[in-house]
Amino acid sequence: MEIRKACSRRLRGCAFASFAYLATTALSVWLLKGPMTDAPTSLRAMVSLLPLIPIGFAIREVLHLVRASDELQRRIDLEALAVAALVVGLACLSLGFLVSAQVFEIKGSSVLIWMFPALSVTYVLARVRAQRHYR
Amino acid sequence: MRELRSQRQWSQAELAERLDVSRQTVNAIETGKYDPSLPLAFAIARLFGQPIEGIFDPDA
Image (cartoon, helix red, strand yellow):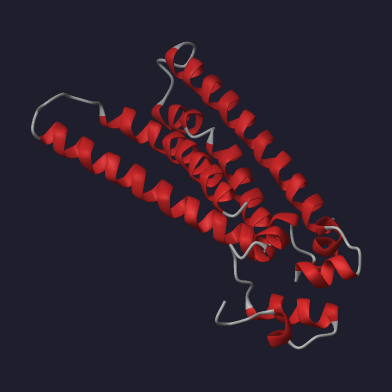
């Protein structure tokens, strides 16, 4: 029961961090495109990095979650992370080849911003698949 | 392991709690989908009062 309690607590923390990330991202984008358009660069840099606060909290929760997990859960996490890293990495590589071949254009900032959400979604999907394998 | 658990009339959740692992881990070991690490295998053997080789078959 201890392991389940610890994992539930950490998962709640991760969910909170995700909502906080979305909120700070929305706030940061709104501020940078609206009231802070002409603000000094240092201030704009600070505001643009606001989402890093919940991300830091999420990293802490994930670390505690992994430490509270048992060996099978860790293996499932490892498999899911490996799949997510490979899928997103190869997708980025393919995108890079396509952009180099001038098939289409894509903004570098868009790719960087979507990297983390893509990694998270792929990780969740890969984890569901890995979990089914061991069921 | 399932036989030993059934003999004691423990549920998978009960055994998982005693071993401090998730129920999924107990299920995966019982269905042969996952081989436990040596420390977990020792913990299982200790809990059932059996030698490791009496519970797990390396050739299975």
